[in-house]
Image 1 (cartoon, rainbow, N blue to C red):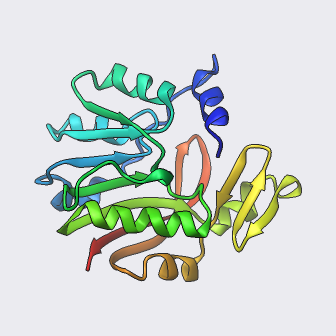
Image 2: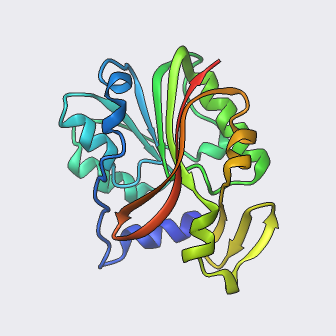
Length: 206
C-alpha cells in the first residue's frame, strides 16, 4: 500500500494500535537468544513490545515516520530505522539471527517480493530465521472489497488503497523455495479486532 495511505491511517484521530495476539509465543526457542533482531514493517511495534517485556532487544523498522513515532513512544530505548524494504535492507551480510515481518510482506509485486526475501536471507546468519505472516487468499475471498479490486498479477490486487498480495499454499512454496520452511500454516487472527486469514511461516536459511 502507498506511503500516503499508511501515513493517513496512523495519523487518524480514531487510530488504535492492534493487540498482540500471541503468535510468536511458540517460537521462544528461536527469539530468546537471538541477536540483532530486525522487526521489519513494525507498525506500532507490538511484536517488539512483547519481546522487550521479556528483555529481548530489537531494531524496529518501518517506512512510515508516524508509525515509528508511535512505536518509539512505547519503546523509547529501542533502535529504529526508517526505510522502504522494497529499496533494500540497510544491513550488512549475516547481521541478524532473526527477522520478524508480521503482515508486512504482502504489499509488493512478484519481483519485489522475491527481492525482499532474498535480501532478508542475505542479512541473516547462516543459522538465522524469518518469522512472518502474510495474507491468505481466503482473506481476499472473505473480507476484501473484491468489487473495487483489480488483479494486476496472479493474486496481487490493486484498489484505491494500493496493492496487496494474497497467498495460497502454492504461492508459499514458490516464494519460499530458497528457504528451509520449518512451519507453515494457514491461520486465523483477531489482531485487528475482526477475523483475518493469514499464513504463518517460520523459515530458516539454507
